[in-house]
Length: 613
Image (cartoon, rainbow, N blue to C red):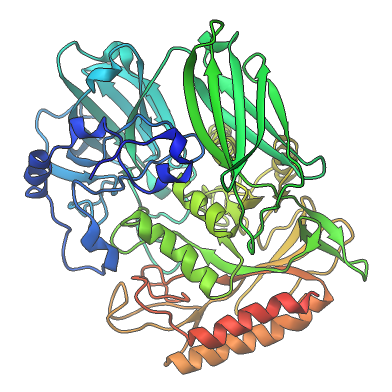
């Protein structure tokens, strides 16, 4: 079950799910067996094949932060106590039962499957022990994502408050730790879902059609990490393809301002840069790469990166492993003078699905890391080179798999309102949206797979588009920005994006922006035994058989071909899987079946790339 992570065994071994030796302190065989007797999935709903692999001792045990990995950490996923209580009530004296973290309380895999609502709070409690080897270090408590407002106490000491449903956050809990072995964490979480003005994507209190079950509370990994007072806090990695170098900035704690950052880069076992540089925290270090291989969907080559922090006496005080891909995305002109999207200065038509990221058994949380990886692998096999991650931000391991497997990502910002709701947004709502937008960019800045930010979808909560796009372009100039996917184009950003069901269609060609089709298709087919409910399923277009669905899909792609030749740079088909009552997926909601003839649609998908050449 356990293995010691060694930084010298290479970056990617740290991401195979091996646990650090420290993790054994908290997870013993007896404890796992006892907790397992307190948990079972809630029965009666649709489940994926990966649900059988979930247990209290095996709940997303993989290292959660692939682009800044340390060898010592402690996974706190597993059995916690929970209580649902009125919002105004203080900490409960007793709890309702046990919940399997990190699955949201609404999900079957949590073992609870209950709604919370805006009038209640969800409380969590668990105990843990700090490994003995951490005594002289700072201890950080990490939450990969909790939806939405979170208050945290450690040993009855309030250590912090966080508002945001999709971004990782941390608290230094060192001073709250007791000298005794046993420690206690308590969380209070409030989430208004669509009754509030915060970013929440497609979560609603009354699911129907394209609106789905809400997620409340912890829905990604919770973990502990020991660090020295002087340590690396974050990385910013910028590939500069034109100059054949990578620019690396290591932001460090205040104690490390006079320390040295050493950088080593390798690719496929060959060390071809060893750079030592002294500088203040935040100092950009350029690493020259001789004839670097460029990252692309067809060749997703990644470079390993090791950073060490050294004090004035030459002692190593911190070390982290990371990786990067050398790639460049920009607008360019084809031979006919049409503005297109180019990857590494080559024309590349982009095609793939609208990817909602919902699961029948885990809601927002995939049952396992293998399940998370499967969706990307399945899309690659079907001939897709891109997906649009739709009004949801995924766990960091999702983007790691996109980086490693070669899947381009258009990343939406989760929307705060439906179209037409609260056109005059409050200043508080705007501030919250922009804080979470910045956190999204910061948390995923280094992933080569992400090539486009999409701040707004179909006018859902859209406001001050020029200003938001301008900020994004200044803050992250090496990616494209889609000002609004569908409906309310404001003439800014890098692409003009239309939606059409079933379509397809294309915006008119422009000199300064590329034309893309951000959503089309939506061809529906419910397959008995693989649906969220037996009756009253919904689709933009409904078909009776797999053969009819396949023919309709092939007809759409035939119509797409001339649009590509005339100027269309990308198209997004709705969607990867069925989601709850919506049955427009390439796959069923449980991922058990490809709903069309896989061979025929794969050939059709791949033929789209030739239409641009």
